Image 1 (tube, rainbow, N blue to C red):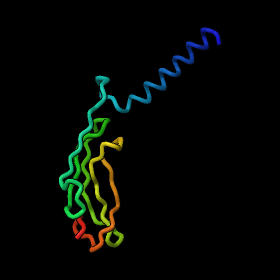
Image 2: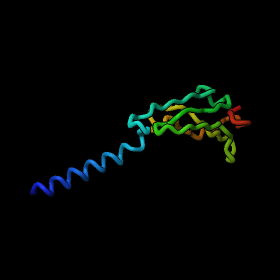
Image 3: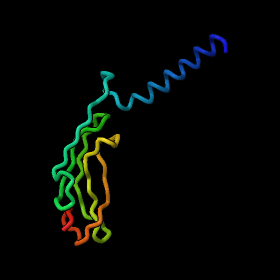
Image 4: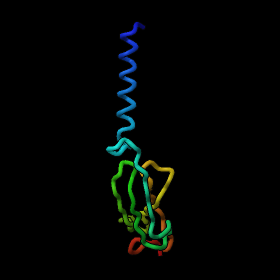
Length: 103
């Protein structure tokens, strides 16, 4: 590979890195710190709301609710393992679901 080819490969690698990291940077070039709070502490038996900021600096807020399927709860919770900083799970409520919580 001659010098010209090496420069082109280097520029392509640099461009890929810039595109890959641009989504997690704020306008100053520093990564955003994500935050999340859960009003019910992850409990299936209390209707709760999660709110915070994702790694791109976008605010979010989601509230637990009973699914259209019988005895199912859509539970939102904070999660440091997920890129967004939150997750959602469908939980089965043995005694039923009402007003965003298992009963």
